[in-house]
Length: 201
Image (cartoon, rainbow, N blue to C red; front, side, top):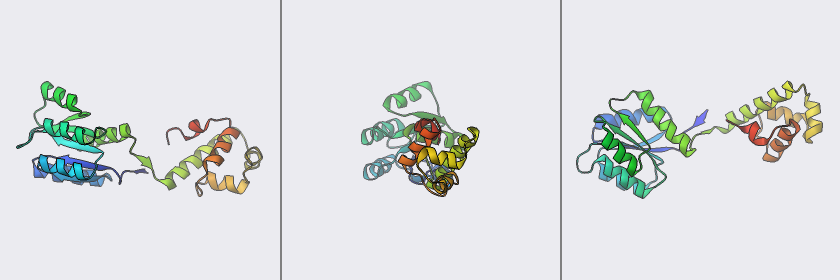
């Protein structure tokens, strides 16, 4: 299961209903949203507390989305900013991208499109990770599958790794987290690079 509860998302839209809808949607997917209907207050919040991702409406009173995008990037150049607008056009898209936006969503948007845009930003920043228990299970399954593919018994793998059959069994069942040393020994015994063993997890 992917972990997202540590990912803070700033939502800036002068329409309270959009803020509420987007905020609830993000919460439902495990994120920590902070919603603002005032661009200046959102910028103050971003100064006080870092957010990794921002969803910014393009047309707002007082300060428009283009300026918000530029100022957010000054506050945190690494922040991924997704622009939301009911008035998409090439000029505004170009300007917000020039200011540092990474994605552009036209309103009204489908919920799955917005979630997918946030997911892309998370992937780009490397923010999503697998829960420890699930990761242990996935690693164990991969080791077991490779061992069986090579027709190796636990005893044979034990002889090659200097790990006991009990230790190997616990690793394969995902009940114990294997140390980097143990994983390196196992991957070497299976003729795999450690990076290959862990790839995609």
